[in-house]
Image (cartoon, rainbow, N blue to C red):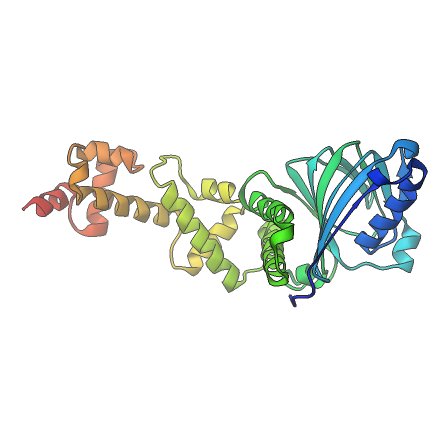
Length: 320
């Protein structure tokens, strides 16, 4: 994504007369959102809202908080003002009730929504809702995913990649005044790549570059948790927010499998401990359990096949 001029703009209704606030807010949000919408205010005489927008001309990150209201984009507005861009909405407090294409959903903290404004939509938010809303150029999603029609998805942002993306966005918002154009663009580019991976689950494209990234993250995750007896390919996929199929494809591309990788990392750790005097007080059975093996016999058999010697022989050779 080309780097444009980076701007930070802030607006607040607190300094306006009560009668002017809703008109100001409607105009502000339509300007920030870049697509006409309608507004229905629950308490127009006492409405309050505040917003900060970061933009580089392509990506826009809106940190918005307001009292209760409903945003509506009608079929007529869609026809007169097409909008191919996506919005990724992450509520930080409060909630949105979303109605689109005959379906209803609720966006609340812990859930993010990737959606399009190419069809009519209604967002009803409760009072005190705060959200981060990212505007993403349509081709940044449709191109990598080879989509001919818009994609929409609800994603878990409490763990795995969903949490990573959310932390990247909250970090952008928190550091808004200390960023340069290239920083903002680089983080947005990366966040969108990860969001694409989340959005399509098992149907995501097999892109060598992405597979290499998945493999690296899987290897790091396995190494960090290798002593956990419950570590499996399924648990790795769940913790990282990917499907098991994607983890298997990434490791297959590297010539291994989740099961083989976990066994190899456990054996590597065991060998390191067998060759270190620090662990001399541990028996072979103890080492087996502490490196994630179910029993000493399973450990010894796997170790001998991999290294051509038993754990006891490795420890003895070190001392001889």
